[in-house]
Image (tube, rainbow, N blue to C red):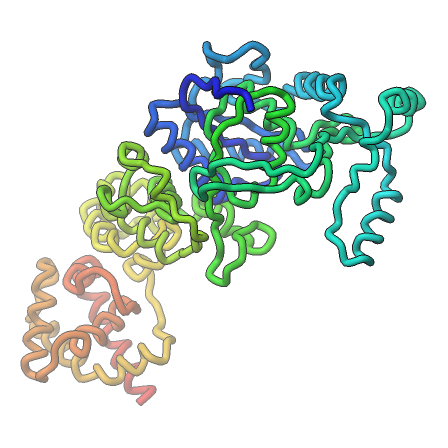
Length: 502
């Protein structure tokens, strides 16, 4: 293996525009970013768009927009310390490398390995390979390519190619040997070449260079020193190390991260789990990007010195790869919502108003409340919002009437009928000042002393009657904002409903 020639820490993220931006991709990007920042290195971006059939401009734009929304940026990929042969092409605006623009370079390296006898043409047809696979299955053997074309001489290979016989190019892994590396997350790793399914294809019959080969050439050109990615890439890493060695490139250090699983222990995927795997879902639902970033980092990383809530810069200052868990990360929407509430609770009012207007039909069409009352309303629900998509469920009763239909809540109204009637009497006798939010609660406390009730038994029937909710802002604030006339109307409706269902 060549002596390590990397001059500085350089990590990267390299998504393929063949689908939506996945939570796992962002999480991997964040660990690469944190490692680079911690070591005063570079974090780079490459778009792996060589799958012509599945790559689309739509997915490319979604990926780039998603990273921009999350405030994840990358550095200039050019390097003054790049060794001879590390040709950097494919650079587009915003420091993005496009793999598809580097195909000629990939093919030059394929030819280099063919010329050196480290790779060979394989002329086996699909029918021949299907028959091989069927025979292995019948014998209850592991299916693998049997390396049959290794024995074809260069002269015969050249002759068949000149005759136009279709072929793929395979890397010659040689005799069975262990490919080993010290994984920065998992420790010492070893995979034998006989467990890699035979000599791997590195170029299709169409001429397209395949993933494992292209990424090695590109990571060498970008001088990537450390690669952190999902543990589902373990066998790819063994193949890629073999390619690094064949090309005479320095091998970067690898770290394989635990994957994100659902509660039922399935790998989180768009195909199985729908939109919850896509970053765009959280953007559309009104999550804050800082909260999603914090949550994704925390799924497999803990640091007692910074606690649970932290910025990327705070995490980078203390980041240690040893603190990455080896166990699968479990997708937990309740935990994500907790993070989002934490971040929402810290927003200034102007930001809260701006976010809420993007998601609220009531605020956009508001003709009922002045600015001061809207401020009181939003500050009253601020700590309760999981995501801004929910805002109208939190404030709708300020703007529209409602009907209580939940059986448990109807039963609460029945049991609290006497409380509601007494507060109506208190209001009728001007015992509550609606200009002072505290006055409503004081009135309820007075009724509670008379009826020897307190807590939920006293407050819950009234809360349900005037808001249709079992939680929310202070009752006095609700009464102050909605106003005396509407509060009386709702309390009377609640009494009537309680009588009707009694």
